Amino acid sequence: MTDQAPIVYVVDDDLSVRGALCSLIRSVGLRVEVFASAQEFLHHARHDAPACLVLDVRMPGLSGLDLQRELSKAGDAIPIIFITGHGDIAMSVGAMKAGAIEFLPKPFRDQDLLDAIAHAHARDATALHRRAELTAIRRRYDTLTEREREVIVLTVRGMLNKQIAAELGISEQTIKVHRHHIMQKMAAASLPALVRMVEKLNPTDLSGGAGPA
Image (cartoon, rainbow, N blue to C red; front, side, top):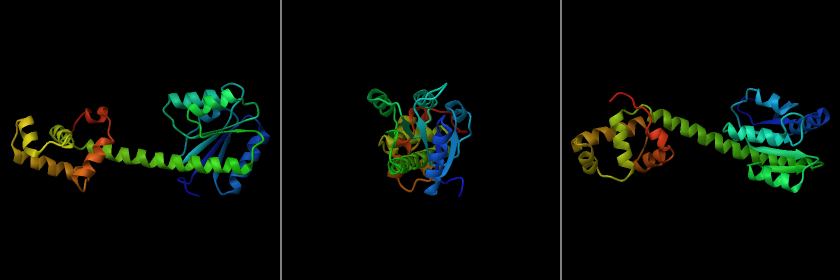
């Protein structure tokens, strides 16, 4: 199994539950790592692979819901599947509103958990792909000069070369040269492709520091 293979993290303070979940998850060929507490999980280095978190609600110290909040504050969107023997409707609703994939009361069917894990991995794989794509776009955007960034912003607004030239006070031919360089640096096969790339960047990306002019 490679480091990119999907992984399941299990956090439960009950040793027997951790063992049973580990055996179940491994029985379908998935990687699994287990933790006895939320604190232990928070201090663990994570793999760069599609992942999900199978999390007990009630634990000593940080509860499962506390861990969910801590991960949310840190911007960590790992899909969470809650399991509990003590949950109630209010707890379930709160966890789901906060982004949990599933909330399974014990005892639950093995297949229900495996189905939730498959759904969580599919969602996280999509999120990983989007993050990797955005990182690549940002890296290419960072190679643009300050002038090229000015041109690209006006280009995606739909302005023509002559309009951009007038806006920036330079010649239309110079704008054509800049646009050619932009298309090369951004690896954009067409203007619509370039527009789609730039739309994925946020205003902070577009106003960041530029390379040499």
